[in-house]
Structures are given as C-alpha cells and as structure tokens.
Length: 180
Image (cartoon, rainbow, N blue to C red):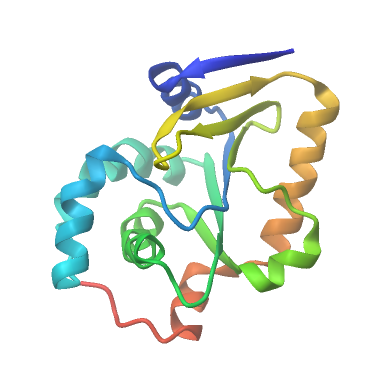
C-alpha cells in the first residue's frame, strides 16, 4: 500500500529513524524555499553562513556520534549545477555532524540501474519516495510499505554506496576549494 505524507509528517518520519537513514538524491536542482536566501548568497559570494546548518548539526550530531547512521548518495551531473555546488559546500557541515555523504557522477550511475527518483530509506524498513512539483519544490513523499519494494530500494542503496565517492575524496577529485 502507498500513502502520501505531507512535509511535516515526512520530516517526522525521517528524523524518527532509530538506527539508519539513507537518502538517494538524483536531481540537479532542489527549490527549497527555506534555502533561497542562503543559496543566493552562496552563488553570489561563494561563502556560507554556518549558522544556517547549526540546527541540523545540533539535532543530528549527538545521535550520529552515539551510533545512529545517516548516509546520502548524490547522483550529480558534471559540470555541476548551481545547486550541486551549494550542496557540496553544505556537505562540510553535514559531514562534521557525522553524516556519510557520497557523490556518484551521473555518467557512472547510468549503467547501475538506479531509480530516477529521490528516496529516503529509514531503518531499512520504511521507504519514502519524494514528490516534487514542477518547480522542484518538495511536496512530501509516498510512504511505501510493500516489502518487495522496500527490499529493492535497500539494493539501490547498497549499489549506490558501493560506487559513489566519499565527499572528502570527491571534493578533491573535482578540485573544489577548501570550505570556510
């Protein structure tokens, strides 16, 4: 069965993970209204205000230090979109909080049979397939409880992680400047 969950419930499900949370990101652009000002400043100056990520780091840092795990694989086009460059810079803070963020160039992902949709996999049992509007704004997610579909997404997670470069390696590979 599939059930649509709106943003507040979606956020609660993601942050409610007990052991692991994994996200596959396949879009070159995300239009998150709360990021608009920070993204604009980053694109014009190349600088990030670390206070933007402080709530995320405070929320997740102790949980991840205590043994919970949050991973992401970002499938990215090269050359990078503006949003991908922004995400690479933000990863400084995500990884400092303990997240494992990896990058998979789109041309390398092409032969891996990965899905073309973003998803969160929570504790390897709960699947959230993200839904966006035509302007790339996140609307919520389809909550999937079909065990076969969940297991297939566990497979996607494992394949993506195996082939992706850890953020620290990827940022060196693509010759990104050091973060602030």
